[in-house]
Amino acid sequence: MTVEELRNIPYLANEIKRFDKLISDLDRNAENDKKAIPIQMKSEFDEAIEEYRNVLIDCRERCRHELKTLTAFIEGIEDQYIKSIFKARFVNQKSWCRVAYNMGGYNSEDTVKMTCHRYLEKYNARAENRPQSENTL
Image (tube, rainbow, N blue to C red; front, side, top):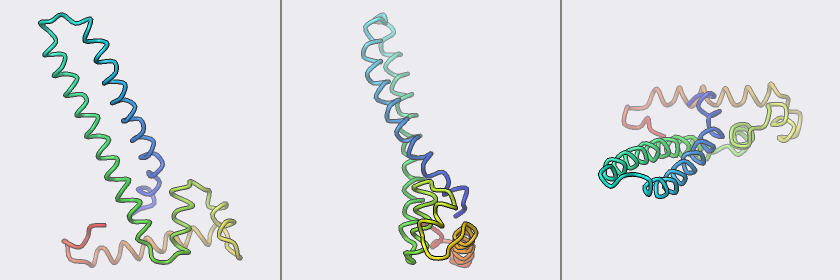
């Protein structure tokens, strides 16, 4: 797991919404556009729309799967302090400075950032040492 992957959480959520809207718009517009198409071409039109719809659904499902994997990773963090850092930074998109402030105490931006990076280093080191079948999140 990397910081770059975790940074994708809000973008994945937005992509899922975008794909939902595209699918909805496609369904709505396809019905209206069907009226203007000659009868001979309706089957080709239906096939093209269905193919495009399936592409959009596949893309949306890939985003959902990746988002689910990333959020499951964060939810799987047992230490509540570290989990709070990850949620604030990657789910709620807070700056490192804001994360440190929200965590309270004598935390600095560098402290919470280092906590995050160290956790990821340890997690990835453990993942590399597991047998191949156990390397799933």
